[in-house]
Length: 362
Ligand SMILES: NC(=O)c1ccc[n+]([C@@H]2O[C@H](COP(=O)([O-])OP(=O)(O)OC[C@H]3O[C@@H](n4cnc5c(N)ncnc54)[C@H](OP(=O)(O)O)[C@@H]3O)[C@@H](O)[C@H]2O)c1
Image 1 (cartoon, rainbow, N blue to C red):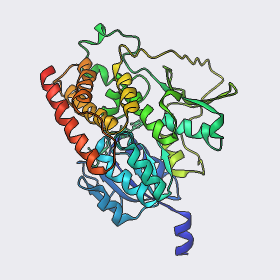
Image 2: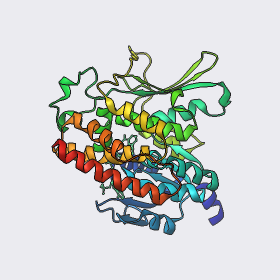
Image 3: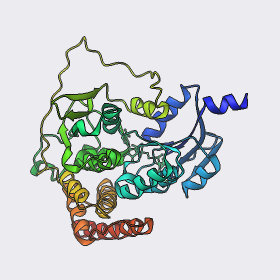
Image 4: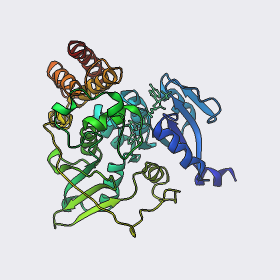
C-alpha cells in the first residue's frame, strides 16, 4: 500500500505559501486528492500547522532537505527565491516556478543546474505557461518567435508627463490581475514584462530578438508562438492564476479546476497594440540587460527590487524606478557569470548602487 501511495501522490513543497500565488496554490492542492502538501514556507507571517513541515524565513533549502518533495512550487517574491530554485534544479526535483526573479538573476547557473539535474522546469507565469503549451512537442526549427502579452497595467496610454505624480495607490490598481504588491508595481512599469522576456530566453533557449511583446488589455490571450509558415498558436482563457498553477502541479495530467471557462457566446473583443517603450523604459532596460548577459540581468533585478521598495514607501517617484535601474546598470558593469558567489556579489553591489541612486532621486 505504501508503495502505491508514493507512486500516485505528488509531494509538494510550497514556498511563499502566504502570498497571492501561494494562497491560490493551497486551493489547488486542497482540491486535488493526489497533491499532498508536505512542506510550506513564508518570509515572516506565521504558518504553523499549514503543512507537516513549515519554516518562516531563513534558508529555505534546509526545509527542502528535510521534506525531500517531488515538486517544489517556488512562489517566493524576489531574489530570496534563488537558493530554492537552484536546489530543485540541481537535484532533478521538478520545479514549478513562479519566482521569475531567480531565473532572471541567475539564468545561466539555473539552466546549467537543470541540465545536470535533469528535472522539469515548469513555468507558473501565465505567459510562459502559455508559450510552453504552444511549443510542446514542436520542432524548434519551425518556430519563428514567441509573443508575450502584457495587459499594459493601470497606466496604459499615459505619457511620461502624466506619470510624474502617480503614487503607489494608483500603481497598485491593476486592471486585470490581482497579485502581490511587487509584481503589481512591476506590471505598472512594464518591468514585469522585461523580467518575463529574460525568463523566456532562459526557459526556451530562444534569442532575445525572437521574443516579441504586445499589449493586450483584456489579458485573455496569455501567450502565442509564431511559426515560420505564418501560423500563430495562441493560448487563451480567463485571467486566473489557478490555471497555470494547476497545470504546473499536475503536469502532464492537466487536471480539472474550478476556474470558469471563457464564455464564447458573449461579445468578446481582443485588442493588441504596440508597447510604448519610450514611456515605459523598464522594458527597454530589461532587453538591454538581457542582451548584455552575464551579471547584467542580476543587476537589473536587484536595482528594480530596491527601487520598487522605495517607491512603495513613498521615497521616490514612479518614473524614478527606471532611472534608478538605469543608474545601477551603469555603475555595476556586466561580467560573465561563472559562480553563484559572483551573482550574490553582483546582487549586493547593485542594491548598494540603487540605494545610492534612490537617495539622490528622493
Ligand atoms: N501574483 C501573481 O499573480 C503572479 C503571477 C505570475 C508570477 N508571479 C510571481 O510569483 C512570485 C510571488 O508573487 P506573489 O504575487 O504571490 O507575491 P506576494 O503576494 O508578495 O507573496 C510573496 C510570498 O513570498 C514570501 N517571502 C517573501 N520573502 C521571503 C523570504 N525571504 N523567504 C521565504 N519566503 C519569502 C512571502 O511571505 P510573507 O507573507 O511571510 O512575507 C509570501 O508568501 C513573484 O516572483 C511573482 O513575480 C506572481
